[in-house]
Length: 322
Image 1 (cartoon, rainbow, N blue to C red):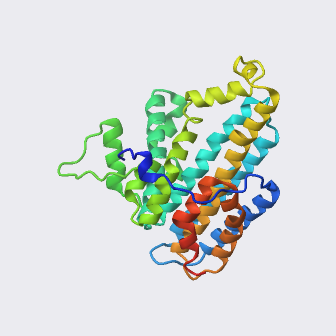
Image 2: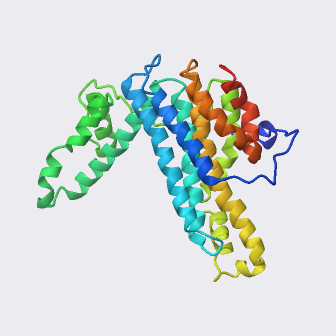
Image 3: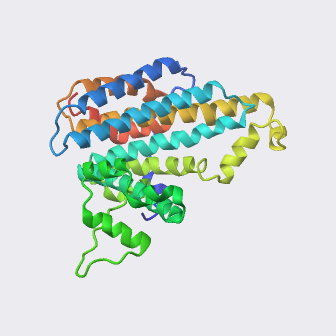
């Protein structure tokens, strides 16, 4: 992806959020849970171009996002401005945003669900080949070296992995010779968020994801161990020199704004927007927009980035059946 300048994705607000608004995290989590239930229930219904396997695994993404949101809540309950460990919830917020990107791409066509699943199998098979290669001289691992684990074979067949694709992996990873005239069959990689942007056809959806991409890069700092992650942790560590530069009230305010609100809001937003995106698959479903609208009503008033996404994409998306 070619890096976009700020001028290409900035949204120009004409009204502000309510900076004095307060929210109840339990009430918001209830709204999120309703969205996940409505989304997974909708995905039990046949949809054009998506078979049972496609829809089941799309539902798993929503269930996974709900689980991660609960994890964030649990970690935040034990965190505070004197606990640098709490900063790690921002890595989980990044995971939630990646879930939204994945859902957006998989709703571009079921072939992306196939790639999502087959890429997973490829990685697991490479992991198996590595373990087999490293243990082939150890007697205790003889049986392991002779055959693939049963679950890998099951997944291979379920995900439609061909013998040609499996042989191609073995050739690339172990240098095993291919039969004469054999044509390689590669399993594509499921794209990361930056590459997802180049695969999205709908202009408004692509614009939304472009606006979210700087937020994704920001959250990547807390996964890759970049300076911002270390700085945040030192800010909330009483033993650190950086902590002495900020008074206690300032530290508390920063922890609430930079860690608690950011992690909770991005997790909530990602799950709710993923629910709204399902409208492209189920335009006649009245339960999806009802749940999404109830969640978006407080969200669009509480977070500037969410407010921008609402204007760029979500208002028209939910208005399809409104």
